[in-house]
Image (tube, rainbow, N blue to C red; front, side, top):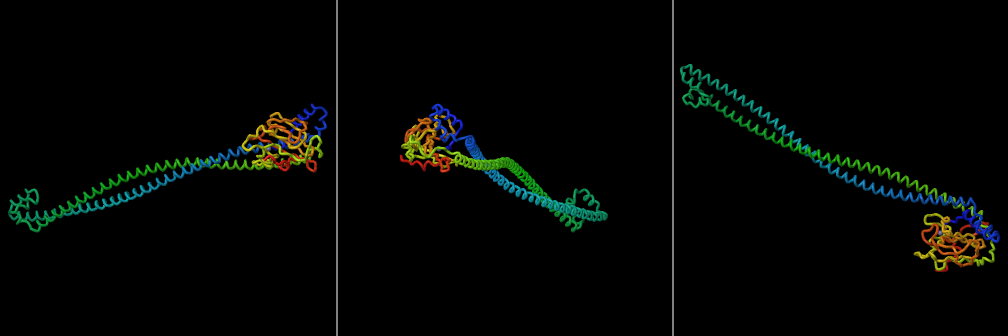
Length: 452
Ligand SMILES: [Zn+2]
């Protein structure tokens, strides 16, 4: 706890001392607290304001850091969502690739089949041409044959012509043995051969038509398969678009979170910079306060009043209590600590007595239970040798201003008033320097724990 002297308190002491009439008036003006003035108070107020600001900024920084951690967790979750979507997309891509290659194969098959059909159609055309040709040849042969028969008729065999003309076809005609001798044997042979050829060509054409039909059926099947594959591909593409839409949404969330994280990082850096700057300002103020105290220090004399019974050696201020929870110097958060905190390990300090470290006179005693700059109930004893001691956070003081106390005399009970996290005695030693100024010094250099 930093030493804090307030003008209002000085007036309060004034009032108390005035109540004791002029007997104490000379003491009032020699009391060190009387040297406090507006400038010191202002410096101390500034210091305290900065401390409050730093604590507020530290709290807000902690919140920002919590947000940073939350946002990082969120980004990680979104990243893993994106990679899961990516693997879905690549599965779909490979399925689409397989379907594409199947479709390509089928299309090649269809093309091949179409080419085969075209070839067969050309063959059929050839066969049909051969049939026509053969039929024409047969027609010629028949006409020649008819010519010969006519010649026979002209030579006087009328009944033969009638028989011939009444026959339905040449075959019927040729079965009639009586006419066989009248036609050329070679013509008959030729016509039989042509008939066989036409029959063979017809069989070939039928076979080609059958092949063509089979190929057409095959093509239809391939087209059906292709349609099925195209449908599957459409489905896979739809799934892929769905995944891509999902990925876009997650990516935009991830982007927003990243923007937020950047803002938070910036905010965090700003808080850190502000806290650093405020600490530097506080350090500066601390130096100014020290300088002020040196310049406007205590006017306490070097020779103690005999009534103070100052024996020259300060005593440990708490009997049977040796634990120093926070030494002179710095608090754990880096702010200065002008005294020594004494308490019990594990508590049970509250209500225990504390004692004057040295004989002297009480120059300040505030027992109103208020905050009092964080001291709570506190008192200051002047030992008349240029040293003063301060006792803070008491649950109850047992001294009054102007009272002469003896070394080791109980002056109050340990408590937890003012700025504390638990019951303890805040003990300070203030010493007059060679140049007449007064500093708050390390109590460990003046009191030794004799209770351990
Ligand atoms: Zn303290």
